[in-house]
Image (cartoon, rainbow, N blue to C red):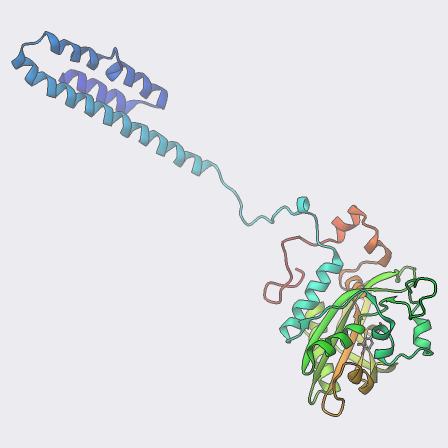
Length: 357
Ligand code: DAH
């Protein structure tokens, strides 16, 4: 019995793989294995002999079985160690984002602008794209005869024959959201309103549908100085530069008084735009102090409250920041264009994580 034990314990210890172990198991404790055959011999023994040999054989069988199990576990552990040593993966590689598509530059820039203004306490407001002409024009101090109505190349909806009410329009700017937000929320307030707007115009820098972002801040003592600071902070964050010079040019909008168009200092070295330095100026938005009549249309008392507003083209600042030449391509749904100018779908712009990278 001791010879059997020594033989199998050393064979098991030296087994190189699971198949060898299985062979050994069959040879030793399988139905016709050596130890099983010995157990059969027990029947031929005297009672005294059996009392000694029986427990010994059982113990031997147990010992062989546990040696087999331990060796099997040892082989499995060694195999896993070997795999862990050989297989590796670089988890710092960028995710593959092609399969789930890319984020359109307009969506990307809208998210970037929203993140920047959210940091300054501006909430996002919305309004309908099919708008009444009162919200789109009258409430913004653009009466029926005003040239601004004609200039805007407005799309009008049809009324049924005999219906004399004024037609709805596709909103020509995001400014009507100012009125809706004032009516809904009252003062004080701080909102931006990104969205689609429509004008009948089409060339390299105009499409009949495009995107604007409106800003509105109403409070007790708001001045042009606040407007200037907010816009400077915005432009620095958006173009991801440390310093930038803004130029406020006196202008005219019916819904603001005074009004200013804002340019940023830039250069066009070798055809690429550099913001913050150079001898050129680039217009990026219209702005001003909200006209008292506009506050009134929003049910806000102009003797008590005042505010600033601004409006800029999202597509335009997207073209500038990312060097995209033709606006029309934005809306062609050309997959090659989308893959080239699109953004990683899981890379949401935040101020702490980086806007564009
Ligand atoms: N609504 C103007 C446009 O579409 C842009 C604009 C100018 C918005 C001045 C404003 C503003 O809020 O104060 O051209």
